[in-house]
Amino acid sequence: MKELSLNILDIAQNSVKAKASCIEINLDETDSTLSISIKDDGCGMTSEQTANVTDPFFTTRTTRNVGLGVPLLKLAAEQTGGELNISSSVSPENHGTVIEAVFNKNHIDFTPLGDIVSTVTLLIQGAPDTEWKFTHRTGEGVVSLDTAELREVLGDVPLDSYEVVRWMEDYLREGYSDINYNLKQSE
Amino acid sequence: MKSLEELAAIRDRMKDKVVLREGNGQIRVVVGMATCGIAAGARPVLNAFVEGVSKENLSDKVTVSQTGCIGVCQFEPVVEVFEAGKEKVTYIKMTPEKAAEVIEKHLKGGNVITEYTIGNAIS
Image 1 (tube, rainbow over the protein chains, first blue to last red):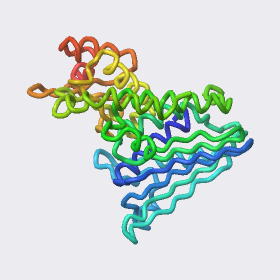
Image 2: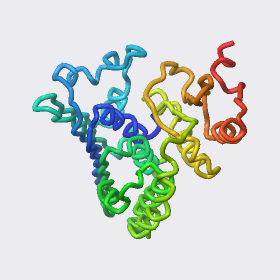
Image 3: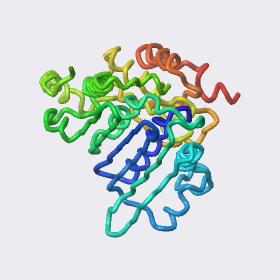
């Protein structure tokens, strides 16, 4: 993966598949670290699944016996001296999953975040009935989007209608430019 | 600055359209968005379809959606086109440029671009 935002796009799909009704994506950035956490209230995983999910040869996929999503994120974090943590449980029911990856931004092997705006808008476009809460805290300020707030305004208009997708994209891009966060710097 | 008022304006414009759209969408464009697809460049391809379908005013008959691994990871990014009464068309090794071509020739014009399909690549 050339950008961490692609890993986020990949991993958050697991939460959609876990039938989560609410998915939170939190990015916390300091001068030296980036922490990515994806939290859902989906079906969760058993302790055996949770223990094995970082193993590339463990997958729920039926098309072949390789699952690289979580292992790739783990690799991207560990190669910067960071780490990946997962907690998940199937009981009590729909306890959900939290996956958190911490990166050292100044490490030479740090993968840039890249086009996070595309990732967020396409995730929402692909699962418009899910509630998405995106928050990116940086030293310069915060960029966030909460689909519950949009839904309140939009009523019956679905979040995947193109005009809404476009609005979300422009909204986020403007948010980043307001805090002078250079999305390009990480490409 | 993008505001929630602007979103309200979109809602008002969309109200009538939403009713129209239901039950429609005779053509379904599905982009493989599993690890394999994403790593191979599916995100800009999906973006190109979402944008292009709207720009060409095809939203009434074409829906763009995402799916997991289609099972032919070596050919990613893979895009499938489902049309009622017709055989499924599988496009492989897609790019945003090829996506624009598919929108123009296939979705608008009704002509499958055989050159980009999986059958063509295998034979």
